[in-house]
Length: 308
Image (cartoon, rainbow, N blue to C red; front, side):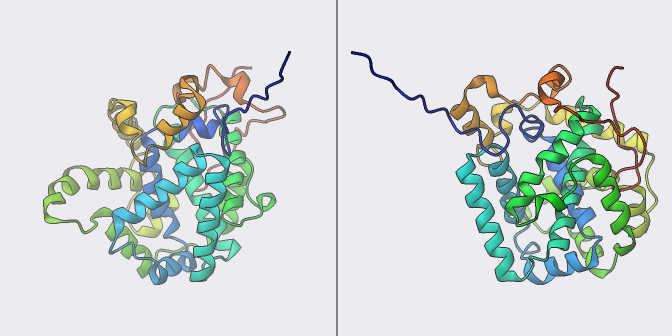
């Protein structure tokens, strides 16, 4: 007697191991990209005013950072059900606080994605132009979960560039932006953690700030450092962080990558330096390279040209 069994495959989540997102988001340099995003997001006066009114970041800086990292980690490596539930919680909070304006949410999204992409590419990960476009496109799934219409969210690097060009006249570094700037550079911590803040955090925050686009430096009122120097420092810092064993690094945010590997198998382990070798798998059909134009901050996109 023959019985037919239905094999239930593990849920890969929103993106899955074949995505650029899966490969990138487990890299430690993402933390630097996240801090860069906060500096950039603060330059939108209306968006940062909402943060100042509704956020407790000045009283619970580490908790807020970890909650954000937990959200990104859940969307990147959690199951589809977990990602949808996380999105529903964020949408509810946004509605309750009255910070669900689509234009402001779009700014936050684009500043975040641009920051991740800029820092990742300048840190030495071999991401080519088609893969960068693929990453921006993938992140429209994350945008949907915070109630944005994916069709109105940039789907490649050229569209992201155009978005920043359009929004640039609205940006300014007012009192709220400078409050965020000061806070990020030297957040209040318990006395026992002051040495760690001075030795580690201030350097990370300074490096994240230095990767900002030239106009952001101008708005904040400081001269932009030489791009080559910043890239060298970023690459050196990233390589140092990558020396920490993966299984130790991936405990933050709470074991998202480790749980994904347990769910889907060891072959799904994120490996961002395999992106160049995996181009044929990761690059979607019909992608064009965008060899001209600047990124959201009028700086170089640090593109790696594809052969041919």
